[in-house]
Image (cartoon, rainbow, N blue to C red; front, side, top):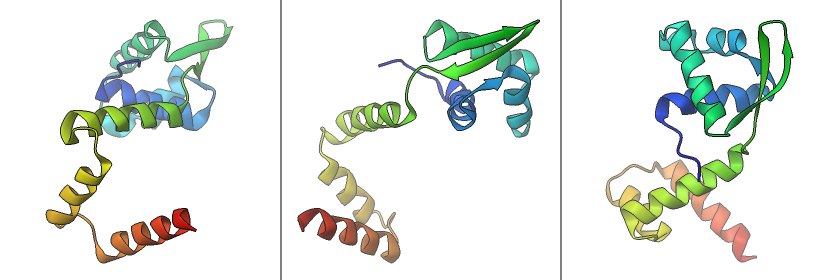
Length: 121
């Protein structure tokens, strides 16, 4: 799995959301991060080097970027690694940890139970 840093992930989220985007569009969407434009361009270049982002076209000095990895696949792999690293690969242990530490609201628990019921039918 491609290792994407937290900062790179913020750029990746924009690329996934927009499907095709330029560095100027990414910079505009990440203005709340207060990152320098060059920092964002560096993050884009890192993602290109990692083959997480590709260039679909070039017009003058403007490049259009596209995701080369699927968001759902990345989330699943990252989630599995997290569960493996912190909960010995057990999703049950993870959920019980959240329940034991009052991290799930009553509504969250009801939703979870409804999803379990759906799967069991």
